[in-house]
Image (cartoon, rainbow, N blue to C red; front, side, top):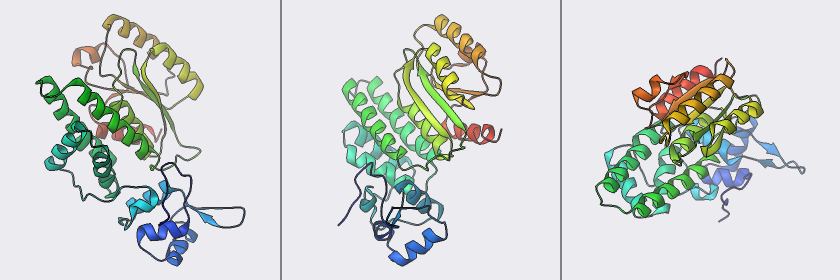
Length: 290
């Protein structure tokens, strides 16, 4: 069976038809009607982007009969709920990366909103992992390994999100210096990209001065800062004020993260505070209109 390796650029109508479980002629008619964007080779053959195929599956509420053909994991029949949260947390802890991958992709291909997957499944799973680590039931390597597995899945998922349009609004984001927590920053990027933004994660533990330089380069409509840890509050406040003063008035500053207590937030000027990815989704919809 011909399959797509992760990261492959395009797929043929024959592959997609088999993956969905329809005839190739039906698939080509959908392409010709514009239901699935396509390109053509120099020889005139149709080619499809896997991200566009996944978007079609989600928008049309269809199911993939053979997801492996597109390089996607087989269905695990997951639904959002406490059982899935417990299973995913256990899989992360035990280092079962393929099971974690199958569960998360199954939810996405099952047309669950991305913000719900992040807030109600992944975040809750890592909350449970954090509780177990705090109680001494886990070693630190298990928490770190779980984070590595999750980020690798999120990076793979990124390739299956809709490709931003050339005129899509731009957003950039990062975590500040001393904050190495990657997952919330990555989920913010994917939440925005899923809504059509050209969202770019600059990375983690960045001095706010270099984010000022990135603002000049990208000229985004939105800047997000994921702040899970603050090493030196006074330095952070000073650098944040400098960053805030350098931001154009039309740029929305969206902040979030467990380090942002009410006391900390009261010292900052920002456009919106997002406690969850659902909040980020609402912000993106509002500021993307401007």
